[in-house]
Image (tube, rainbow, N blue to C red; front, side):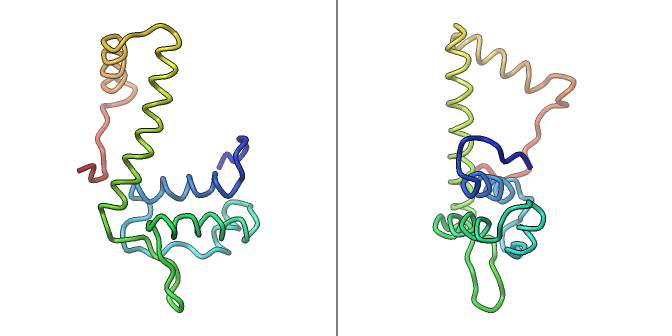
Length: 131
């Protein structure tokens, strides 16, 4: 896990955990690994992991149950909302980069289509419910 950008570690961890949820690596309704497990896996202080998980709780992606642990939401609308926000951020960065080097919408669309279906990419099949 690459946690070396300029943002606080807990923010970076929250992003990693968010992606695990929206990608289905942590499916709806499943128990999230414990703070101690995540701290050991990531090499980060448990308090930092707890802060990252708290952010997911506030977003409604996870919920802590007193005696049972923390679970991924079963509300697909919440997961899809977060997925769309992540995709929008990535899209905005992509657009900014390509417009900065002088590409227009038609060129950008052609490039995206070309790269989506490139032999080294094997076509992209989504596994999440993007509806």
